[in-house]
Length: 310
Image (cartoon, rainbow, N blue to C red; front, side):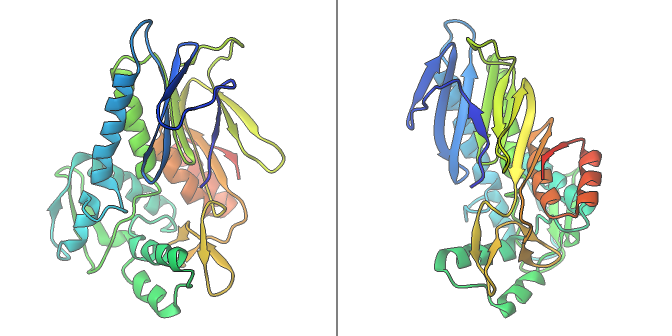
């Protein structure tokens, strides 16, 4: 799993609770299939633990809506709906799907939230060590096409035009959840906060620092040495083929699927982008990792993100 390193001035994080340093408390819990970190700076004498608990409980509720891994989630329940039938969905699912479909359109379909049938095969290959067969891949790819997903944003309802479709919002939902979690702690009175999960991170404000740092210090790994960012707002996301791989008929294939080819990306490098919202940087890091350089730059300009590494 790709990971952005947050430099917490030597603070060692406890795996099951929180540690405080200079007015900052950091909490860690497992959600979204990975460890999430939440660092809070609260007003003087105000405890951080109740707000952290509320934030992680909120993540749990959103997972039940957006998770592709949970068979009982709202997202997965859409698989049982007959094709060409409108189904009402919750506002979070409607909003995340709208963003994902927009990125799919502007990436020429390389990024595709209907990739679920193929990612399900990839997970089975990763679990068993057996490559995906050509016949299974071809059958799954027939059920993948973002253009066959209809979204009525005004009424928050969805319709599939093909049978057997399955959505996978893993390349955008995590970032959206981080954004929503960050908004919750801001409303709850936090003066500054940082949330990270895997290759996604978002912040606001600045932690107190004896070194006088102007914001959250984030190290982006690069082959020639880390790039150091100092942030007081915004998000950073990293995505690419190095994070997870499964056996293929020839070598291995990454978990980042090119929907047009029906295969995991074979690009060598990862992509890191910076922008205002983690939902956007999450999706754009994945989409840009699938595009030629020129098209990736064009997509970055459209969504107003900055490519840090590629």
